[in-house]
Image (cartoon, rainbow, N blue to C red; front, side):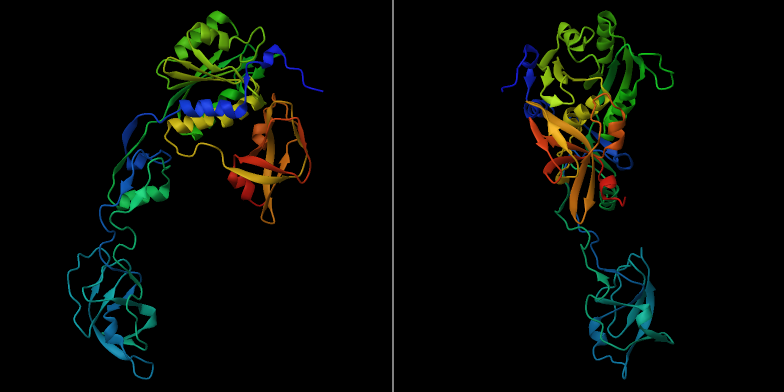
Length: 421
């Protein structure tokens, strides 16, 4: 029996088509030159190429004695070779001396080797008496020596445009002498929540009211993406107040996000008010569960994401649509959540014509991924985003998935997946 398609379903667009439209609409913002001490988590807007070898000279890898390896030839326990120690070289010394044949110098880790020295032997492997160091075996050339350009070679591409800057890369940039870097500007993302039922987290809800968890979740998620979020407050489901709040919220924003008022009820006003203000809705609804009311609009140059008010639905729509969009704005090359195939340890299903996103817990067992759907997938729940570390992505149904089936899973929190239970 074929499914009944109502007039309300005619404006649904496929999940992947919605993602395609948003992917085509996002691009990196302008760039800015930022001090190296402030680039953690930012995205590089330029390639960085090494302009010199680092270090340009051989260095000692150990505390010990530098020598010419040829001078230790023939050394053995029964007949050790002794070399007089003429001086000591420390890290930081601007060394230009040449090592005389038949001599050795004391040396510390990181110190430059004298000219003609080609080996270092750790102090604990030798015997020193009266200023003479004795070798009981030949020391091979290159022993305990960092060769020139061992760390960085001139002309190497050390950082690619679009890379996220972490502590290790910041250290490397400092090592090659970069004190600042051109990075993409973080987008100013304004968040406006709608709904007569919403009260602040510090308030005691009355009958029919709920605390506004979406505001805290979305502000945190935006910060994780590298955005500069601003909360524009909560507005009642009244056309005049909503219109006024929308006009105020778009000022100086690079992206506007609204929550609530996105469906087709009497008080779901966001889409119609946006259109009355001149916004162009690129799509009004998505064949997605949860998150069907999600819409994407363009108001002049300003992109707008209209999220549903139900917390689980808003969380899903953020990860599937808003997160990739914002990451594209900050210049990230990879914008989608990591995806793996995992074995179901529970049951899941998708509805007719809808892509289904299922909150789940992903874990590892004997080198394989296993995923268990959370029991209650109601889109109004706040608990699901808190308990899940992953999202199962089921294609348009109807279809049932049983224990043992392989399903695609998006990973939200790798640390909880791999940590011991």
